[in-house]
Length: 191
Image (tube, rainbow, N blue to C red; front, side, top):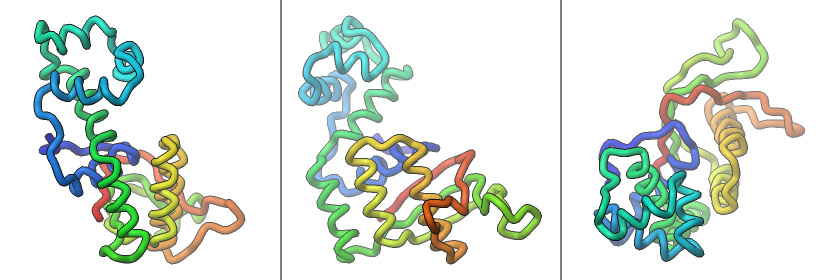
């Protein structure tokens, strides 16, 4: 299920990193995955809206009259299962990181990254391939933002500040974002 998955979304990358801590594998067929998702939503119409399809299409898959393999719907189903599978295991892994019982959190990305100002310097923004250990305080902020479904801009700001502090050895002051993370080719977390 996770083979060959990569993303340019920080939220999705956090979910994929959490998936490496699962103690049981999620359902394998789209029908079984939909049954799992249906148990997490108030009704099939709400689930259909979230997956950008119609309740009739989901019902056809549940009744084995249709398959989602090879479609954007299949990818949406997989992504949603990854997001919702084993939340207690996920939180336990996060707690170990925050309590320093684990190696910590690493981020690996290829993106446009650098200082907002200082044009022409070696620290000016450019495409960079970076692997960096994130300070625990930023990992905590990332997890909290993800728990409340923070938007991609908020998550990107947190990662930018964290990598800015770890990579450039500067911390954001007074709410000013000295570094900028944009145009992400791919991003991956490990912990």
